[in-house]
Length: 257
Ligand SMILES: O=C(O)CCC(=O)C(=O)O
Image (cartoon, rainbow, N blue to C red; front, side, top):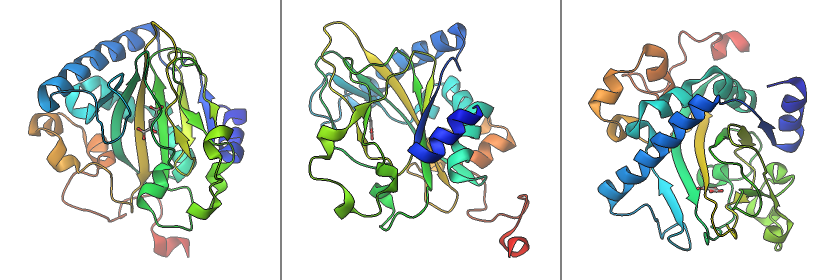
């Protein structure tokens, strides 16, 4: 990330980092995405989740790190971690990693902020962040994620305007980019009004280490996947016997005060 991207992230709560995936990396991620759709069909019967989405043109893949090693590589890449740490600070954990595809006809889910789903107001600090990997060119017409400008500064549910949805804008980015979105940003999926374009996005969700991750990785990941991890990867997934100790980090709390 360059200085202008960092500045935009700090001020506006989001930025786009283009050209992060090489054509080969993009092809591998797309192929793994397709395997993920099969995994959903086999494990859950369908990639449509009616609890979250309005119709079956919306597809989701849960638990991406269990689906293919390429997703663990994406989560642990320096560029993605640097972006996540820019928002939440050095003590970051992988909270969840899921994918959404908006096929032609896909509708919009409910407007929400990911941090507000788990942290009670007031939301004074940025404790979560999404690094959104774009596997397709993402544009308003094919259902780009929509965000409410400035909403990372809202402190309570009452601060969300009645007509918030009308004020949202689309994140438009080329395939191979990632979009960094602060966890307090109110957002939703767009509607795909094209006749023949899919919109595949991967949502790598990181949070500070003192928030309980959305996934319980010791249950969600097969033993073989956990065994293949190096120490740093295990640490990022919050695996290992210690739950919430910062011994071994750069600074302990005692040293800071
Ligand atoms: O698919 C999108 O554009 C947004 C998805 C989202 O916000 C969610 O799944 O929580």
